[in-house]
Image (cartoon, rainbow, N blue to C red; front, side, top):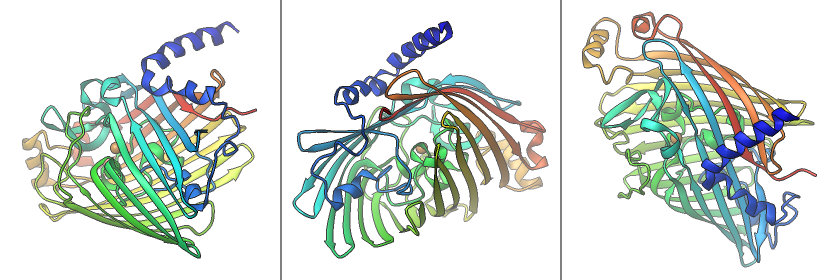
Length: 438
Ligand SMILES: [Cu+2]
Protein backbone atom coordinates (compact mmCIF):
# COMPACT_ATOMS: atom_id res chain seq x y z
CA UNK A 1 0.00 0.00 0.00
CA UNK A 2 1.34 3.40 -0.98
CA UNK A 3 0.36 5.20 2.24
CA UNK A 4 2.18 2.57 4.22
CA UNK A 5 5.38 3.17 2.25
CA UNK A 6 5.08 6.93 2.69
CA UNK A 7 4.35 6.58 6.38
CA UNK A 8 7.23 4.17 6.82
CA UNK A 9 9.62 6.55 5.08
CA UNK A 10 8.70 9.67 7.01
CA UNK A 11 8.59 7.82 10.29
CA UNK A 12 11.97 6.28 9.56
CA UNK A 13 13.38 9.77 9.10
CA UNK A 14 12.04 10.77 12.49
CA UNK A 15 13.31 7.57 14.03
CA UNK A 16 16.80 8.40 12.75
CA UNK A 17 16.61 11.82 14.35
CA UNK A 18 15.67 10.44 17.72
CA UNK A 19 18.60 8.17 16.85
CA UNK A 20 20.26 7.41 20.12
CA UNK A 21 17.13 5.84 21.40
CA UNK A 22 15.84 3.96 18.44
CA UNK A 23 19.09 3.07 16.73
CA UNK A 24 19.83 0.81 19.64
CA UNK A 25 16.87 -1.35 18.72
CA UNK A 26 18.85 -3.33 16.13
CA UNK A 27 21.10 -4.66 18.91
CA UNK A 28 18.09 -6.52 20.18
CA UNK A 29 17.16 -7.52 16.66
CA UNK A 30 20.55 -9.06 15.99
CA UNK A 31 20.48 -10.93 19.26
CA UNK A 32 17.22 -12.57 18.17
CA UNK A 33 15.35 -11.98 21.37
CA UNK A 34 12.06 -13.08 19.94
CA UNK A 35 10.91 -15.03 22.94
CA UNK A 36 10.78 -12.73 25.93
CA UNK A 37 12.05 -14.39 29.04
CA UNK A 38 13.26 -17.44 27.15
CA UNK A 39 16.76 -16.37 26.34
CA UNK A 40 17.88 -15.11 29.71
CA UNK A 41 20.67 -17.07 31.32
CA UNK A 42 21.72 -18.07 34.76
CA UNK A 43 18.87 -16.56 36.71
CA UNK A 44 18.00 -17.04 40.35
CA UNK A 45 15.19 -15.61 42.46
CA UNK A 46 17.14 -12.39 43.01
CA UNK A 47 17.61 -11.94 39.25
CA UNK A 48 13.91 -12.44 38.64
CA UNK A 49 13.23 -9.69 41.09
CA UNK A 50 15.50 -7.26 39.31
CA UNK A 51 13.91 -7.84 35.92
CA UNK A 52 10.74 -6.36 37.34
CA UNK A 53 11.99 -2.93 38.48
CA UNK A 54 10.66 0.09 36.59
CA UNK A 55 12.29 3.37 37.64
CA UNK A 56 14.67 3.12 40.59
CA UNK A 57 13.21 0.50 42.90
CA UNK A 58 9.58 1.18 41.99
CA UNK A 59 7.54 -1.57 40.37
CA UNK A 60 4.44 -1.97 38.25
CA UNK A 61 2.23 -4.94 39.11
CA UNK A 62 4.05 -8.19 38.48
CA UNK A 63 1.28 -9.37 36.16
CA UNK A 64 1.97 -6.56 33.68
CA UNK A 65 4.24 -7.58 30.82
CA UNK A 66 6.71 -4.74 30.49
CA UNK A 67 7.44 -4.03 26.82
CA UNK A 68 11.14 -4.70 26.40
CA UNK A 69 13.74 -6.61 24.48
CA UNK A 70 15.56 -9.16 26.60
CA UNK A 71 18.64 -10.99 25.57
CA UNK A 72 22.02 -11.93 26.96
CA UNK A 73 25.66 -11.32 26.22
CA UNK A 74 27.67 -14.15 27.74
CA UNK A 75 26.46 -14.49 31.30
CA UNK A 76 24.99 -10.97 31.41
CA UNK A 77 21.27 -10.64 30.91
CA UNK A 78 20.37 -7.43 29.18
CA UNK A 79 17.11 -5.56 28.82
CA UNK A 80 16.29 -2.70 26.52
CA UNK A 81 13.30 -0.47 26.93
CA UNK A 82 12.48 2.69 25.09
CA UNK A 83 9.73 5.01 24.09
CA UNK A 84 9.52 8.12 21.96
CA UNK A 85 6.49 10.22 21.09
CA UNK A 86 6.27 12.84 18.40
CA UNK A 87 3.54 15.18 19.60
CA UNK A 88 1.75 18.17 18.22
CA UNK A 89 0.04 19.97 21.07
CA UNK A 90 -2.50 22.77 20.98
CA UNK A 91 -3.48 24.44 24.28
CA UNK A 92 -6.27 26.99 24.16
CA UNK A 93 -6.81 30.39 25.73
CA UNK A 94 -4.63 33.37 26.61
CA UNK A 95 -2.12 31.20 28.48
CA UNK A 96 -2.08 28.33 26.01
CA UNK A 97 0.33 27.65 23.20
CA UNK A 98 1.20 25.09 20.60
CA UNK A 99 4.29 23.10 19.80
CA UNK A 100 5.69 20.09 18.03
CA UNK A 101 7.90 18.20 20.47
CA UNK A 102 9.14 14.76 21.34
CA UNK A 103 9.34 13.29 24.83
CA UNK A 104 11.52 10.19 24.79
CA UNK A 105 13.64 7.87 26.88
CA UNK A 106 15.73 4.78 26.44
CA UNK A 107 16.85 2.34 29.10
CA UNK A 108 19.41 -0.43 29.12
CA UNK A 109 19.94 -2.77 32.05
CA UNK A 110 22.55 -5.47 32.59
CA UNK A 111 21.93 -8.13 35.18
CA UNK A 112 24.32 -10.72 36.58
CA UNK A 113 23.96 -13.23 39.32
CA UNK A 114 26.26 -13.08 42.33
CA UNK A 115 26.47 -16.56 43.76
CA UNK A 116 23.49 -18.72 44.70
CA UNK A 117 21.22 -16.18 46.27
CA UNK A 118 22.14 -12.75 45.00
CA UNK A 119 22.25 -10.72 41.83
CA UNK A 120 23.11 -7.22 40.75
CA UNK A 121 21.98 -5.01 37.92
CA UNK A 122 23.32 -1.86 36.31
CA UNK A 123 20.79 0.60 34.86
CA UNK A 124 21.30 3.41 32.41
CA UNK A 125 18.43 5.58 31.29
CA UNK A 126 18.78 8.39 28.77
CA UNK A 127 16.49 11.01 27.32
CA UNK A 128 16.96 13.43 24.46
CA UNK A 129 14.13 15.66 25.69
CA UNK A 130 16.48 18.62 26.00
CA UNK A 131 17.10 18.49 22.25
CA UNK A 132 13.61 17.50 21.15
CA UNK A 133 11.73 20.10 23.23
CA UNK A 134 12.66 23.60 22.20
CA UNK A 135 12.77 26.51 24.65
CA UNK A 136 13.08 24.26 27.71
CA UNK A 137 9.36 23.46 27.89
CA UNK A 138 6.29 22.31 26.07
CA UNK A 139 2.91 23.99 26.58
CA UNK A 140 0.67 22.22 29.10
CA UNK A 141 -2.06 24.26 30.77
CA UNK A 142 -1.87 24.45 34.57
CA UNK A 143 1.40 22.54 34.71
CA UNK A 144 3.93 23.88 37.23
CA UNK A 145 7.34 22.82 38.51
CA UNK A 146 11.02 23.64 37.89
CA UNK A 147 12.28 26.59 35.89
CA UNK A 148 13.30 27.79 32.45
CA UNK A 149 15.53 30.81 31.79
CA UNK A 150 15.53 31.73 35.46
CA UNK A 151 11.74 31.83 35.79
CA UNK A 152 9.34 29.24 37.16
CA UNK A 153 7.73 27.14 34.44
CA UNK A 154 3.97 27.79 34.49
CA UNK A 155 1.54 26.27 31.96
CA UNK A 156 4.39 24.19 30.64
CA UNK A 157 6.29 20.99 31.26
CA UNK A 158 10.08 20.94 31.48
CA UNK A 159 12.20 18.41 29.56
CA UNK A 160 13.85 15.51 31.36
CA UNK A 161 17.59 15.15 31.77
CA UNK A 162 19.91 13.45 29.29
CA UNK A 163 20.95 11.10 32.08
CA UNK A 164 17.62 10.16 33.62
CA UNK A 165 19.25 7.49 35.69
CA UNK A 166 22.48 5.64 36.20
CA UNK A 167 22.71 3.25 39.11
CA UNK A 168 23.32 -0.21 40.44
CA UNK A 169 20.98 -2.60 42.29
CA UNK A 170 21.94 -5.51 44.51
CA UNK A 171 19.40 -8.07 45.70
CA UNK A 172 20.07 -10.93 48.10
CA UNK A 173 17.70 -13.65 49.26
CA UNK A 174 18.40 -13.90 52.98
CA UNK A 175 16.12 -16.71 54.04
CA UNK A 176 12.60 -18.02 53.55
CA UNK A 177 11.05 -15.20 51.60
CA UNK A 178 13.13 -12.46 53.18
CA UNK A 179 15.06 -10.35 50.71
CA UNK A 180 17.53 -7.51 51.05
CA UNK A 181 17.63 -4.88 48.33
CA UNK A 182 20.24 -2.17 47.93
CA UNK A 183 20.34 0.55 45.29
CA UNK A 184 22.89 3.25 44.68
CA UNK A 185 22.42 5.78 41.91
CA UNK A 186 24.40 8.95 41.13
CA UNK A 187 21.18 9.79 39.28
CA UNK A 188 18.10 7.79 40.15
CA UNK A 189 14.70 7.41 41.71
CA UNK A 190 14.39 7.30 45.51
CA UNK A 191 11.71 5.39 47.44
CA UNK A 192 9.04 8.07 47.14
CA UNK A 193 5.79 8.00 45.21
CA UNK A 194 4.25 5.62 42.69
CA UNK A 195 6.02 4.46 39.54
CA UNK A 196 6.89 7.68 37.70
CA UNK A 197 4.54 8.35 34.80
CA UNK A 198 6.99 7.70 31.93
CA UNK A 199 7.32 4.13 33.23
CA UNK A 200 3.85 3.54 34.57
CA UNK A 201 1.71 0.82 32.96
CA UNK A 202 -1.46 2.94 33.09
CA UNK A 203 0.24 5.99 31.51
CA UNK A 204 1.75 4.23 28.49
CA UNK A 205 -0.52 5.90 25.92
CA UNK A 206 -0.27 9.44 27.27
CA UNK A 207 2.70 11.44 25.99
CA UNK A 208 2.13 14.42 28.27
CA UNK A 209 2.92 14.71 31.97
CA UNK A 210 0.17 14.73 34.58
CA UNK A 211 -0.31 18.16 36.16
CA UNK A 212 0.14 16.45 39.53
CA UNK A 213 3.66 15.32 38.56
CA UNK A 214 5.29 17.59 41.16
CA UNK A 215 2.95 16.31 43.88
CA UNK A 216 3.44 12.61 43.23
CA UNK A 217 6.32 11.25 41.17
CA UNK A 218 8.63 14.18 40.30
CA UNK A 219 11.55 12.85 42.34
CA UNK A 220 12.17 10.17 39.68
CA UNK A 221 15.27 12.11 38.64
CA UNK A 222 17.22 12.82 41.81
CA UNK A 223 20.93 12.88 42.51
CA UNK A 224 23.00 10.69 44.80
CA UNK A 225 20.29 8.24 45.72
CA UNK A 226 20.97 5.51 48.27
CA UNK A 227 18.13 3.08 49.01
CA UNK A 228 17.93 0.05 51.26
CA UNK A 229 14.91 -2.22 51.34
CA UNK A 230 13.67 -5.37 53.00
CA UNK A 231 11.02 -7.45 51.31
CA UNK A 232 9.05 -10.18 52.96
CA UNK A 233 6.39 -12.11 51.10
CA UNK A 234 3.79 -9.57 49.97
CA UNK A 235 5.44 -6.54 51.52
CA UNK A 236 8.46 -4.38 51.06
CA UNK A 237 9.81 -1.55 53.16
CA UNK A 238 12.35 0.86 51.72
CA UNK A 239 14.21 3.96 52.86
CA UNK A 240 16.26 6.41 50.82
CA UNK A 241 18.63 9.28 51.27
CA UNK A 242 19.22 11.61 48.32
CA UNK A 243 19.96 15.12 47.13
CA UNK A 244 16.48 16.63 46.92
CA UNK A 245 16.97 19.78 44.89
CA UNK A 246 15.34 19.36 41.52
CA UNK A 247 17.45 19.15 38.36
CA UNK A 248 18.77 22.54 37.23
CA UNK A 249 17.91 23.97 33.84
CA UNK A 250 20.94 22.51 32.16
CA UNK A 251 19.58 19.11 31.27
CA UNK A 252 22.83 17.84 29.74
CA UNK A 253 24.89 17.66 32.91
CA UNK A 254 24.83 15.51 36.03
CA UNK A 255 24.41 17.50 39.24
CA UNK A 256 25.83 16.42 42.53
CA UNK A 257 24.91 17.38 46.02
CA UNK A 258 24.93 16.25 49.60
CA UNK A 259 22.36 13.76 50.81
CA UNK A 260 19.93 16.22 52.39
CA UNK A 261 16.57 14.56 51.73
CA UNK A 262 14.95 11.41 53.02
CA UNK A 263 12.06 9.17 52.18
CA UNK A 264 10.46 5.89 53.18
CA UNK A 265 8.02 3.72 51.26
CA UNK A 266 5.94 0.72 52.14
CA UNK A 267 4.77 -1.57 49.34
CA UNK A 268 1.99 -4.07 49.53
CA UNK A 269 1.31 -6.59 46.76
CA UNK A 270 -2.05 -8.29 47.42
CA UNK A 271 -1.59 -10.41 44.29
CA UNK A 272 0.37 -10.58 41.04
CA UNK A 273 -1.80 -7.93 39.43
CA UNK A 274 -1.67 -5.40 42.24
CA UNK A 275 0.90 -2.95 43.57
CA UNK A 276 0.09 -0.53 46.35
CA UNK A 277 2.37 1.86 48.17
CA UNK A 278 2.37 4.60 50.76
CA UNK A 279 5.39 6.83 51.09
CA UNK A 280 6.62 9.97 52.67
CA UNK A 281 9.66 12.13 52.14
CA UNK A 282 11.24 15.39 53.13
CA UNK A 283 12.76 17.22 50.19
CA UNK A 284 15.34 19.85 51.02
CA UNK A 285 14.70 22.98 48.99
CA UNK A 286 13.33 21.17 45.94
CA UNK A 287 12.46 24.28 43.91
CA UNK A 288 15.42 26.47 43.01
CA UNK A 289 13.35 29.65 43.00
CA UNK A 290 11.27 29.04 46.11
CA UNK A 291 12.26 29.02 49.74
CA UNK A 292 11.63 26.15 52.09
CA UNK A 293 11.47 22.39 52.20
CA UNK A 294 8.68 20.13 51.11
CA UNK A 295 7.16 17.25 52.98
CA UNK A 296 5.53 14.96 50.45
CA UNK A 297 3.10 12.16 51.24
CA UNK A 298 1.77 9.79 48.61
CA UNK A 299 -0.38 6.70 48.38
CA UNK A 300 -1.19 4.71 45.27
CA UNK A 301 -2.81 1.58 44.00
CA UNK A 302 -2.01 0.08 40.62
CA UNK A 303 -3.99 -2.72 39.10
CA UNK A 304 -3.39 -4.69 35.92
CA UNK A 305 -5.99 -7.01 34.50
CA UNK A 306 -4.56 -9.44 31.97
CA UNK A 307 -6.93 -9.67 29.01
CA UNK A 308 -6.82 -11.62 25.75
CA UNK A 309 -5.76 -8.43 23.92
CA UNK A 310 -3.18 -7.16 26.36
CA UNK A 311 -3.39 -5.76 29.89
CA UNK A 312 -5.88 -3.30 31.23
CA UNK A 313 -3.89 -1.16 33.66
CA UNK A 314 -5.20 1.44 36.07
CA UNK A 315 -3.77 3.63 38.82
CA UNK A 316 -5.21 5.60 41.70
CA UNK A 317 -2.79 8.09 43.17
CA UNK A 318 -2.87 10.65 45.94
CA UNK A 319 -0.02 13.03 46.59
CA UNK A 320 0.31 15.90 49.00
CA UNK A 321 2.96 18.58 49.36
CA UNK A 322 3.39 20.47 52.57
CA UNK A 323 5.59 23.52 52.22
CA UNK A 324 7.61 24.52 55.27
CA UNK A 325 7.79 28.09 53.93
CA UNK A 326 4.09 28.74 53.29
CA UNK A 327 2.73 26.07 55.66
CA UNK A 328 0.28 25.13 52.93
CA UNK A 329 -0.94 21.61 52.34
CA UNK A 330 -1.63 21.03 48.67
CA UNK A 331 -3.39 17.86 47.59
CA UNK A 332 -3.57 16.03 44.29
CA UNK A 333 -5.65 13.07 43.14
CA UNK A 334 -5.17 11.10 39.95
CA UNK A 335 -7.02 8.24 38.28
CA UNK A 336 -5.57 6.81 35.08
CA UNK A 337 -6.35 3.85 32.89
CA UNK A 338 -5.46 2.27 29.57
CA UNK A 339 -7.70 -0.36 28.02
CA UNK A 340 -6.59 -2.42 25.02
CA UNK A 341 -9.28 -3.40 22.54
CA UNK A 342 -8.64 -6.03 19.89
CA UNK A 343 -4.87 -5.68 20.23
CA UNK A 344 -4.44 -2.60 18.06
CA UNK A 345 -6.62 -0.10 19.87
CA UNK A 346 -6.06 1.62 23.17
CA UNK A 347 -8.57 3.73 25.03
CA UNK A 348 -7.00 5.83 27.71
CA UNK A 349 -8.04 8.31 30.34
CA UNK A 350 -6.56 10.41 33.10
CA UNK A 351 -8.53 12.46 35.62
CA UNK A 352 -6.84 14.77 38.06
CA UNK A 353 -7.70 17.20 40.82
CA UNK A 354 -4.79 19.33 42.00
CA UNK A 355 -4.39 22.31 44.33
CA UNK A 356 -2.12 24.82 42.61
CA UNK A 357 -0.55 27.88 44.21
CA UNK A 358 2.14 28.68 41.62
CA UNK A 359 0.02 29.64 38.60
CA UNK A 360 0.71 33.37 38.95
CA UNK A 361 4.28 33.22 40.20
CA UNK A 362 5.47 35.15 37.18
CA UNK A 363 2.79 37.84 37.62
CA UNK A 364 3.16 39.10 41.21
CA UNK A 365 0.52 41.82 40.79
CA UNK A 366 -2.18 39.41 39.71
CA UNK A 367 -1.05 37.00 42.38
CA UNK A 368 -1.43 39.68 45.07
CA UNK A 369 -4.81 40.73 43.72
CA UNK A 370 -6.14 37.15 43.67
CA UNK A 371 -4.70 36.52 47.10
CA UNK A 372 -6.68 39.43 48.53
CA UNK A 373 -9.93 38.57 46.72
CA UNK A 374 -10.01 34.80 46.31
CA UNK A 375 -7.06 33.14 47.97
CA UNK A 376 -3.71 31.69 47.03
CA UNK A 377 -4.67 28.15 46.07
CA UNK A 378 -6.72 27.08 43.07
CA UNK A 379 -8.22 23.63 42.68
CA UNK A 380 -7.84 22.55 39.08
CA UNK A 381 -9.51 19.55 37.50
CA UNK A 382 -8.00 18.01 34.36
CA UNK A 383 -9.99 15.39 32.42
CA UNK A 384 -8.20 13.63 29.61
CA UNK A 385 -9.46 10.99 27.23
CA UNK A 386 -7.47 9.54 24.37
CA UNK A 387 -7.19 6.85 21.78
CA UNK A 388 -4.20 5.18 20.12
CA UNK A 389 -4.23 2.91 17.11
CA UNK A 390 -1.29 0.60 16.55
CA UNK A 391 0.09 0.51 13.03
CA UNK A 392 2.47 -2.29 12.33
CA UNK A 393 5.44 -0.63 10.66
CA UNK A 394 8.58 -1.97 12.30
CA UNK A 395 9.34 -5.37 13.73
CA UNK A 396 10.75 -4.37 17.10
CA UNK A 397 8.92 -1.11 17.55
CA UNK A 398 5.31 -0.76 18.53
CA UNK A 399 4.23 2.16 16.39
CA UNK A 400 0.93 3.85 17.09
CA UNK A 401 -0.98 6.95 16.08
CA UNK A 402 -3.07 8.65 18.71
CA UNK A 403 -4.82 11.71 20.00
CA UNK A 404 -6.15 12.96 23.29
CA UNK A 405 -8.14 15.87 24.61
CA UNK A 406 -8.10 17.48 28.04
CA UNK A 407 -10.82 19.69 29.45
CA UNK A 408 -10.39 21.56 32.71
CA UNK A 409 -12.40 22.79 35.64
CA UNK A 410 -11.13 25.90 37.41
CA UNK A 411 -12.32 28.50 39.90
CA UNK A 412 -14.24 31.44 38.40
CA UNK A 413 -11.64 33.80 39.87
CA UNK A 414 -8.98 32.70 37.38
CA UNK A 415 -11.21 32.36 34.30
CA UNK A 416 -10.28 35.88 33.15
CA UNK A 417 -6.70 34.61 32.74
CA UNK A 418 -7.39 31.14 31.32
CA UNK A 419 -10.66 31.59 29.48
CA UNK A 420 -13.95 30.04 30.52
CA UNK A 421 -13.36 26.62 29.00
CA UNK A 422 -9.68 25.96 28.46
CA UNK A 423 -8.84 22.77 26.54
CA UNK A 424 -5.65 21.04 25.50
CA UNK A 425 -5.28 18.58 22.66
CA UNK A 426 -2.48 16.35 21.42
CA UNK A 427 -2.00 14.41 18.23
CA UNK A 428 0.93 12.03 18.31
CA UNK A 429 2.90 9.14 16.92
CA UNK A 430 4.24 6.71 19.48
CA UNK A 431 7.24 4.39 19.14
CA UNK A 432 7.98 1.78 21.77
CA UNK A 433 10.55 -0.98 21.79
CA UNK A 434 9.10 -4.45 22.11
CA UNK A 435 10.02 -8.03 21.69
CA UNK A 436 8.89 -9.19 18.26
CA UNK A 437 5.94 -11.52 18.22
CA UNK A 438 6.02 -14.70 16.25
CU1 LIG B 1 9.56 14.11 35.53
